[in-house]
Amino acid sequence: AAVLGALLMVRSDRGSPVGERFQERLRQLLRSLRILRSWPGALVAVLILTVANWLASILQTKLLFDGVGAGVPLDFTAAA
Image 1 (cartoon, rainbow, N blue to C red):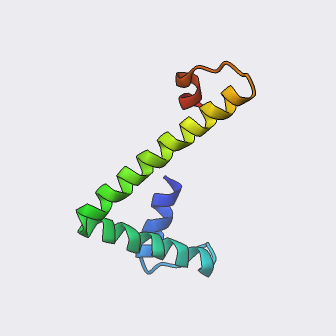
Image 2 (cartoon, one colour):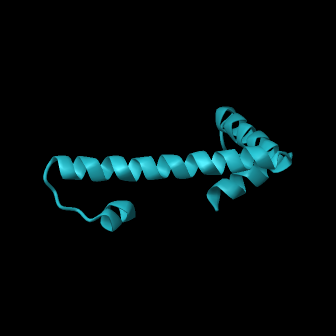
């Protein structure tokens, strides 16, 4: 909710209580969101890569637990 509020403040021309550097980061985020909205293929690619990264992180954590002999079930690893 805070990010949404900050994005709305950047979109409006009102003064913002945050610094210029933070405002520039929010503008870049808005630009990225506009690109994803206008190009659905990019959104699908980002979603696929995000899920792949998520699964790789879960697998890596599971392998690390197994490597030290901790018997942690996969569903607990995924929940963590």
